[in-house]
Image 1: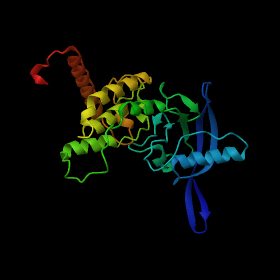
Image 2: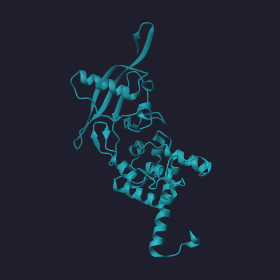
Image 3: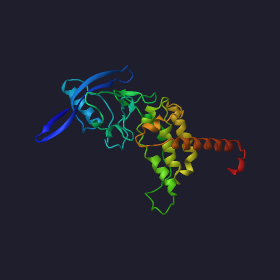
Image 4: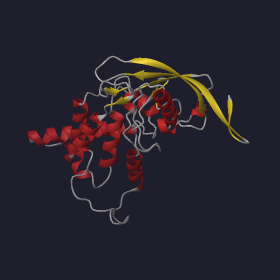
Length: 272
């Protein structure tokens, strides 16, 4: 479908049917179906949702609630499940980076919130992700004053270590890993945060306490267990890999063993 929007110019548009989840906290929800007649292919998915809400407001109806902030793929707020996939069908992008040119004219698109026990629905497409906040509060920090950014050669860090820490630090905490996991596990998120800090010299003194505290907070928040299906890695918009889960398991087990030996006074084999 092509619609002329300016003299001498044309803007391709789509006619779409949207099935969008409507729900208030603590109440049953259901899908509502709406039609948009002229969605520009250049619009982002969130801009398309803005068009839908404008149409609803003009009709005297309640707009849909959804999370958004930077709209640049940085903040991780745009938490939508699109046609059954967190952030939609394209790999390596957030919802705000998904554009309507990736959909077909006449297509029906189903939009839902994150589906996870630890992410209860606040309203419509917005969910409560405070469970992530509790995990970060438990250990996602360095408690000593580290000062401003040091000169690069003051504290040498091997390049492979620095690269691995930076790769883990790309996690934006959007929650797609939890929404894609059949267990609602947050292991990819927690693994990324623990890996990021535990690899760096500034984070090493608190590495054991951090791993144990963040895993405990993850369990207390109601997240499920990891069974290594890999959906989290496939749907992570920042490409965080299962390597961080392996490192989290190693750091957590090592911390618990060291804590056990310290509490019993038993010597560790090989002086480890």
